Length: 272
Image 1 (cartoon, rainbow, N blue to C red):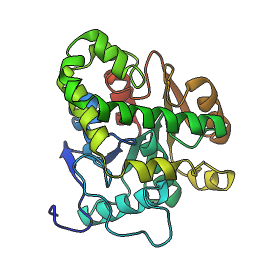
Image 2 (cartoon, rainbow, N blue to C red):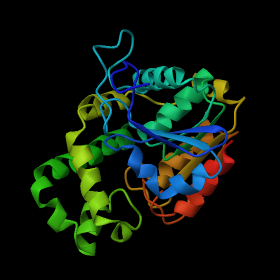
Image 3 (tube, helix red, strand yellow):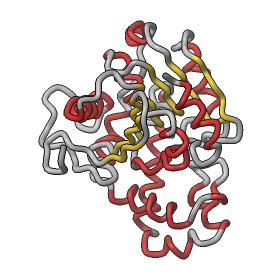
């Protein structure tokens, strides 16, 4: 499979064992999983991908026929096409935020043999949904406006705390260059606006949960998540998915992989 193929997505593949697909959130890229990849790849064939319109993946071609562009359903369709082109069948799937919603959707379709969702979208009320849209939109606006100054602003711990504290529980520990590259990816993502508009209409509905009963589902949530706040949305997730395993990640933010890589890697390895 090559970059010019219509179903190609940018991705990193490493390791041996049963396949595990990793799906990032809105404005992010596959590198968000980097803190856990080496450990997980000791146990799994890990495929960390860039969703269409994010990272190094091209935006989706044309207008989808039956779904809103950038929606959970549409992006799930694109992931399925990519996995089919790779010849990967019924992998374990893990996702974060928007990617968590996509992972749940793939589980509902029977594409995933197991699902782990880190702070997934879809367990919000109207206020929480709007808050999420505002926070991610504001982060993108800040990344765009401050982009020339980001290497200097993020060189010190105080700058990383101020700029990255919305997403991480321990932003002062982050690498400066990784922060700069991630901010640039957020600012440049051509799929951002469509996905931000579309994901607001997606919510895990009661009729969707029955299809998940036959597979292992884990929902993990950082207790310091400021984008999809843990106290309310994790509670809704427990009510909507009572058969799932629900795991709090103490001290972790919305992107927990750099905050507690050992705990996140352990969950990913166990999810099969």
